[in-house]
Structures are given as C-alpha cells and as structure tokens.
Length: 272
Ligand code: URA
Image (tube, rainbow, N blue to C red):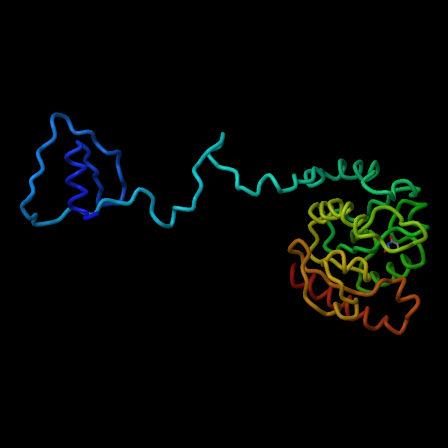
C-alpha cells in the first residue's frame, strides 16, 4: 500500500504512528476528539516525515519472543540437551569421593580399588595414561609398576620428580585382563578426568600411549602419526608420546620419546 495513503488511513482511525529521528518507536497515540476528514488532495509538505518503521526489523524477525522467568525463551533443542554432569561442579574432595564410590560402569564389579590420580594438584605438567594395571589396582595409585618406573625416569630426565607432576589415567578402574578400555567405559569416566584437568589447570598435558591420545583427542590415528603435532585438550596444549610400557618392549623408540619430552619442556617454558 502507498505509504502516504496508509498514513492517512491511520490518521482517520485516530492513530498517529510516530517515528523519532533516533529510530525509537513510541506507542501509537490515540487521538482525542473526532477524526479529521481525509483530504483527498493534501498539500505537499516541504519536508516529508520519516517513513513509518516496520513493526519488526528484518534482522530481528527470526528472534523468538522473550518469555520465562528470566525473560529468555528456551531454544527449541534445549529439551534434547543432556543435563550437565554434576561432576563438573565438584572440588577435589568431592571428586575423590565420587570416584571412590563410582558405579558408572561394570568395571566397579571387578576392581580392587579405584585409581584416582597422584601428584601436585597445581602441577604445570599433567601426565595422562590409559588405565590401572594389576599393580595400580592393588595399590590405588597410577603408574607404580615397571611402566611407572620408566615414566619416573623419563620425568627425571627433564628435571621433574614424580611428585612435581599430576598423573592420572583415562580410566579410574582396571579393565580385567588388562584389555583395552571400552568406548562406553571411557565415556563414563571422562567427566572425572576433565574435572581433574580443570582443577589442576596444567600448562601442558602429556598423553602417554595410544589409548590416552585417542581418547583425549577423539582420534583413531596411531601414536606414531600423532607425535610431534600441536593439539589442545580443553584448550591446554597437549603432547603425544609413547606409553612407557611400549618403550619397555621397543627401547629403540626411546629417542623419539626423548624428542617428545623436549617438546613438552619447550611448551612449558613458552607458557611461563
Ligand atoms: N599404564 C597406564 O596407562 N596407567 C597406569 O596407571 C599404569 C599402567
């Protein structure tokens, strides 16, 4: 409809649709008294009034109306979203207790003890392995067997005592027969590890071995291909290296692990 005709209809209905020069649109005013008759030949105005604004500007047309207690409408997919895992709100004490009592997967039936993690809870370097083995399951501490002794030596080689880093695993319980963690087990355990990372806030994470690297990075690649690349886990730089148990079987790859350790040291120095 022609704008000037529309405006005259509005005026005839007693409605003045004002538009301020700054763009704000006040409520339409109800005109007092009888409507003016429409002049079929209105005099030309020297300066035409600014156009009447559309009720909703085009860039706002898809925005849902404000509703609800806080004035926000729920996005349509909200009902489909998973509730946030309560683990993400726990402090160290709460997290430790939650892990110790965990029954999220079948591994709780076969474990001797949960293996929470050990070391400096404000460490710059966090080492993440696969899952407890037979020794760790007995003692409740990660990397205490032969692989653990080699890990300690690797850390010492870069000037760090075991107590100066935080060491944890993807799984907090031992898979029977030392089989690989199942995807659903890793998924159930993931909030515990993520919470540990969030609490430690390390400057660098070192993923040791295929299972740790693949689970943390949601990848299917071999460790040999992941080494030397830049990754991040929850926005923290992550270095991939061989598992010490693998290095015990393949000692000729220790030189590559040494390169990876040097890389981690370089990253730590960059983030000081
Ligand atoms: N291997 C791991 O990945 N973690 C341990 O705690 C022990 C052996």
